Structure formats: structure tokens, C-alpha cells
Image (cartoon, rainbow, N blue to C red; front, top):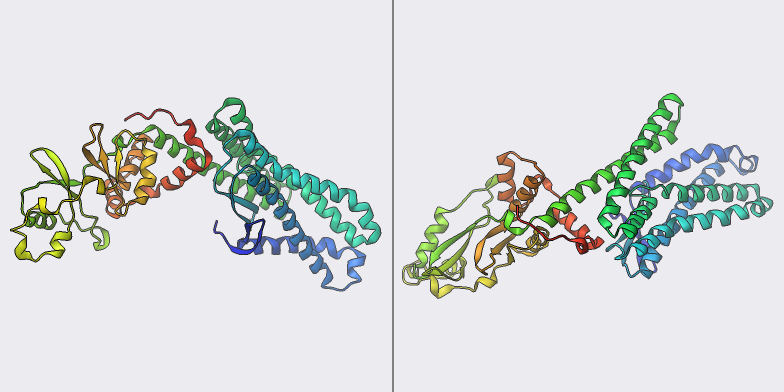
Length: 426
């Protein structure tokens, strides 16, 4: 889901509206209009009054959703968690945070705050229905409907399955009692999957057998959305588990060349000309690094700058040792590091490549995105056709569009790395 348009800031939190929000507001207005048109007081105000009150109902409904999300956000701020934005969209609202609470009970308080706000607002409105009805039947109807909406909003969000608040509460409780946030995510994801399938089944049954209309289709849509969120969460957990267990050594390749320090620059030129590889659509893949040794000792690295800066006549007179750069100028990672650490390091590397250093502190190979992706797929017992793997290598991307960057970002934001086991090589 995109960010949408920013309307304002509330306590420093950007409030955004996604384009799909206008669709659901229009739909709610159309559905609510017959109820308003049946009131004699509304009929007396004119033909367009029922549409105006229907639109007002839809807008106030989303004010309730906004207050619900503000409940989450303000408690998150108290827990020391920065809130990036609140976005209203097709299925309600969502508050984006930079990371999850570092403690189980902090996560519990943030998750419970939204339904609590909705319950309190619903109860206050229910208490005010009688007084509002004495002022005006129209106001009484409006207050009554908003009271019911807020109570339903709270109860619906308390269903114990991700991505609902009830799922977050369940995750926090399992995390608290077991000491494992990962176990909490697994339990809440499983219950979310069950509830989503049940919602889809009930929606289809109500639509086909009972003529449930828009309400039944809405139930199917909610179930489908929940099922997709559950499936995505399961996939992310699988990727995170592999990235935590594997080491860099399991994915290491060898995409560097080795030359002796006393060789002339022309040898570097010949190596480049002989090693050119045309990638897909004519794009050449990044040139292999060239490491320089003397008598078996690693001296440094050399790039193509001397070939560009010096006239060709100098290539036979000057040797590689005259243009060396230290090995530590190349982005590197230890082969014993867990594989997840390679993902942000690769993103920070200008060439999308890392030099892998062995236990003795010497170069052992290189690591690119394609190497990481292939190791992850192998650990998941998935095999892609060689052309797909080669395409990923040429483009220096993750094969099959693996969302490894998002998986690692989620690990870092959620605090799952605190549960990190000792990595092992496969």
C-alpha cells in the first residue's frame, strides 16, 4: 500500500489518505443512504439531505478509525517508539511505526490501546444517545450508529489473529509467557490464517445461500486481505529463519581475479578485455575485483583508474604495485557472520558486492545479492532454473524477487535479533 496524500500532522504524526479511502467512503455513503432516507425528519429537509447525512456518517466513521489509530500511536510514543504515519485506506486505518516495542508488555499496551479507545468512545456515545434523541431524532440516529460502529470496531479488532489488534495482543502475551517473540508471531499468524479462511467461507456462504449482498462480499474481502497478510508473514518468518541460521560462508562465491604485483598494467587491460561479459539486454555485469599478491602475500587491490588516467604507452612501463590500494578499501564481511548481516552491507556497497574474509583475516571470496538469494533458496529446498539464477547475477539482484531487504528490516525493527541463535554453516 502506498503512502497516499498527507492531510495534516497530529502530535507530529503525518495523517495520510490513500486513494482507496475515497472508494470506501463512497460505498459507505451509498449503503447508508436508504436508512437515512426512511426518516421523516430527513425527508422533510429535501431530497439531497439523506445523501449529506450518509456522507457525514461515513466521514465520522473514519474519524472513529482515526481515533482508534491515534490510541495505538500515542501509546507507542510513550513506549519510546517513533510513529512514521497514520494512513486511512480501503480497509480502515494503519499506523506505521519505525520499530516494534522492545518488550512484550510494551507491545501489549500499544496493541490494546486502539480497541480501548473504541470501547470508551462507543460507551460514551451510547450514554449520550438518549440526550441526543431529545435534541433531534436525526442527531440521535447519528450518535446511535456511531456508538454501534465503535463497539463493533473494537470487538472486530480484538479477534485473535494477525494483522488485527487481537493478533498483536495474542503475540505479545505468548511472547511474555514463553520469552520468545518468534513463537508469539507464529501462534498469532496461525490463528489469523484460520480466522481469514473462516471469514472467506462465511462470506461466500452468506452471499450464495442467504443473499448477504455487500456485507457478505465485504467479509470475503477482509478474509482475503487477512489471508494475504498471514501468508506474507509466514514467508517472511521462513526467510528470517534461514538468514539467521546460515553464515556468510554458505553463500560465498569467488568473483575476484588475482595478479602478481610485478606484472605490467597491460596485464590488467588484457584481463579486462578477456573477461568482459555481456549481460541481459546488453548490460555488462560489474567487473570482477582484482586483488594483487607478491609471493603468496596479499598486498592490496587495483581498479581500472590507471588504465583510464595513463596513456597506453605507459601500460608496459608501470607495474601493478605502483597503483595499489589497501584491501580494506573494499567493503568486506567475515565469513563467520550470520547471513542476514550481509543484506544491509550489500545495500550499502556501491557495487553491491562484498569481499569475504576468512578466520585468518585473508580474502576467501566474494558475496553478491545473487549468491545470498541462491543460498537462501537452497536452504528452503527450492531450485530455480539456471537461466533465472544467471539473470539475477547479471542484474546483481535477488533471484525470484526474494524480499530479503524487507525481511532483515523487519528483524531489526521487531527485536527478533535478540533471540538470534549461534549461526552454523551449511
